Picture 1: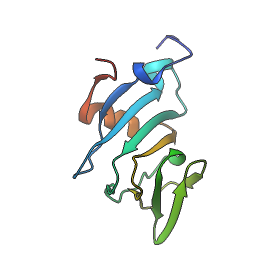
Picture 2: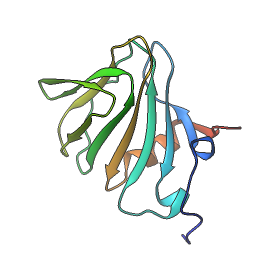
Picture 3: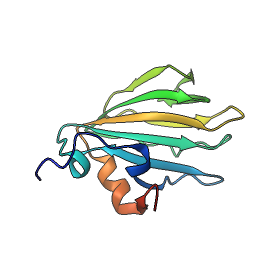
Length: 134
């Protein structure tokens, strides 16, 4: 792939629903190989309505990081429950079971970094519905 751009705005991101039952949950793929040619990482923005919890899962090959933009929640890694709020960063090593819960009265909004990329590709295949502005 040739370099398309260096910048992707939130309103230009590929957007889809995350597989979290019970409310609004979405992802936006900002930077990855398809958007800017990044081959060694992917950067996304996720958002969970209050009260939602993701399904516990793991990524065997990818290092995974979260940066909390707004809201409050709990990130569980294996048996450890880590309370999070705006400004917190959390690292999940490859192979560790983890889940994200939104615990406040407002949506939990956070950046997600995968290195190497991988889960972003599965998200594209499972339900991206186009640009946020479409």
